[in-house]
Length: 271
Ligand SMILES: [Zn+2]
Image (cartoon, rainbow, N blue to C red):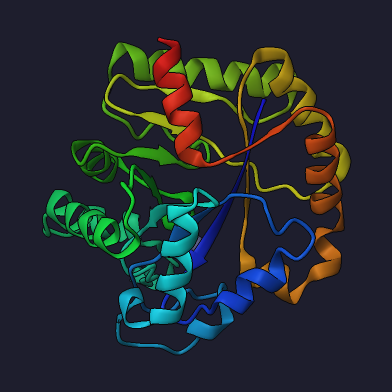
């Protein structure tokens, strides 16, 4: 069974030490980093971005880009695209994540996402085939722009049915709610939309909960992806005891440390 750690928010203000300190307990795990290309302010998130008003390009921080490029070339990490600015806007006082406010604007999302996918491929030297929406929120135009650029998506089940209606999307929607109702767990495996794959990442750090997910994933031969943030681990080590204990437990019990891309290609080859 494949085990994936999706770590969000690496950006211009991140240094290799932030990541190394967060992962001292499992330094060899091939973490999948969801990286912000032009960070503004991850409000309520990564503290180093606080108050930053102008977009800062990750490529201008050579320490972090060289570090990630080196790890990517050795297969010890994956690179995912995490929004563009990770900026929140506040129409009528409502905190609105990037892929929701961009949905309402006229800009060409296909071009924008395609541009930064290519920038990343040059910067990090590997193909980039997965998009992660800030706050896990994405809508119709956004998801279309993702798959029109040949990318897959990692995110959490949206409450509303905001997809293009197709047979596959309706059956996926029903299926994952059925799983949620019957198992009380969010569906962890890969969903095939015909246009792209989606792999949800669970954001729990409780040992017993993760163990339950692990048993379920083993039973149905699904990968388990867990979503964390290096800056939050770095600043709250105690909170992650259950998470690290679980990762070690899972590795001792047959989980394969995997990158996000390994799950998508495995799924693709299964068909
Ligand atoms: Zn984020």
